Length: 288
Ligand code: NAP
Image (cartoon, rainbow, N blue to C red; front, side, top):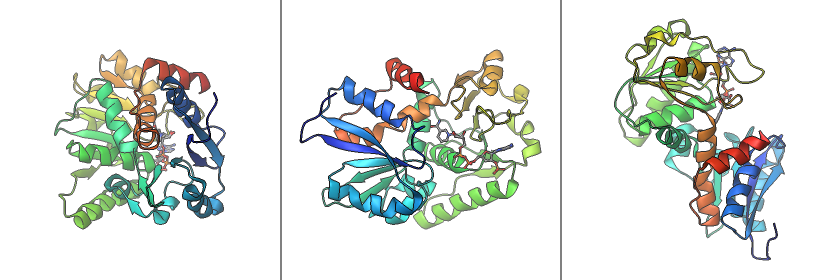
């Protein structure tokens, strides 16, 4: 790949950054669209984040993605936040506007819904069960709220975190003047029972990920036309997705969310709307 003196440059800030799949992902799209541009991984220590963000317009970068541990800390350094970034309380995509101001967006909710839709699911005002109350669960609940799915039955090992997450959404809705999402907190030991009449089950915990304990859940109560999705993507087919497939349920793996969440940033920085294709999945998986 060669770039000219007027190449468009974007990248990703993280600490550590070596594991990031984003350079491979954006690199694939840059190459497919023969764009005069580059997407660069930057190892940015937490204390250096404010200076690194200030440097974006100075260096002429179009913007960056943010990954662990910068997503929450970055919010206070943005000139403006999108509604999704405000609702989720974290920024994963920064765009430098024409005045050099930083616009903070969060595309995880978009990526989550787009991936589900790619898998044949469509939103309806019916019950959904979300497991987890960390950063990923925030994005998932935001996405379901925006898509009009509900009630959301939220269950987390540490119940107080689920209660706090539900309260966060009520506060945001009150501040926005919009109706609160219907979130019902379900004790972790009642998660099997919560599946009765749920049309969607989302694992937004880190359970089932390589190196972590398995997720224990009995999906017998899910209706036959329910969809099951796992946002864990290592392994691609988790035990949960295997059990759901064995029951003949629709399943959607976690890689699609990772790929789709990258699209709005690429579009903003490189002025091309890229597609999530089997070739992209293969390119990213080769590096996983
Ligand atoms: P996080 O903020 O650290 O939250 C972890 C969640 O997992 C919490 O709800 C935690 O419950 C739960 N958990 C961890 N160990 C548990 C255990 N032994 N038993 C029961 N629950 C347990 O992490 P995150 O950022 O939300 O990420 C969660 C997962 O999503 C990770 O695997 C991450 O790689 C994946 N992810 C995927 C995408 C994608 O694009 N596909 C995007 C973001 C994240 P407690 O509150 O009780 O600790």
